Length: 253
Image (cartoon, rainbow, N blue to C red):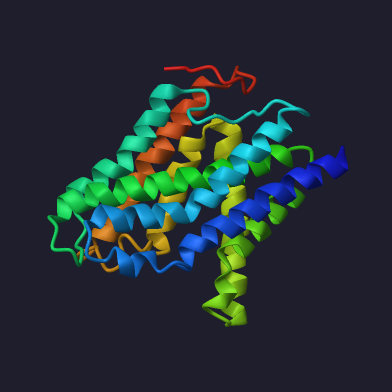
């Protein structure tokens, strides 16, 4: 069983790190070739940086189901609250607006960027929480989050663009802490979307390519404050209503 588990994780990770980094490092120069096209094309290319994680997870989850059922799903135990968490950051970005180099209306671009980032976060969360955390559920929590955090860090390959040891250690620490924090959301809600909502906030902090230099004044911190506060309120209400559930994927409203 341990050999099969390791086999599944290797399949997931090889697919995740190979396919995602084709788009991250723009191996085929698709960004230059499509630079004159509509901004939505650039958004799609950024979103595809997470496609390897999604594809790896979908394959590994099917293999895992032969050994045990998956506890995670897109909406988890509440369809309504998952949809609220999905809509929330997109609405905030649309209202606040994101400045951009395409001379597109900032509110329209805010909607486009918000939607693109959230889809990207869903792709990632299918892998790290939807598959890997589920796969490693029998490990002690500190071992599980340490391993997921390290693999998450390595998937980004940050040392290729920044060789500073301290910066890399800080980033590794952030990935481990994020694995624990978002991991708690996964346990409480069983929802990929709920995990993606908090991953979205991390992307604002890390300056996602879709929103770099796009916030005016303090709008970045206003966006973070609103999204994070309302997301916490929604999840707190969610978990209070779900105390008596056993993690089954039953939609609650």
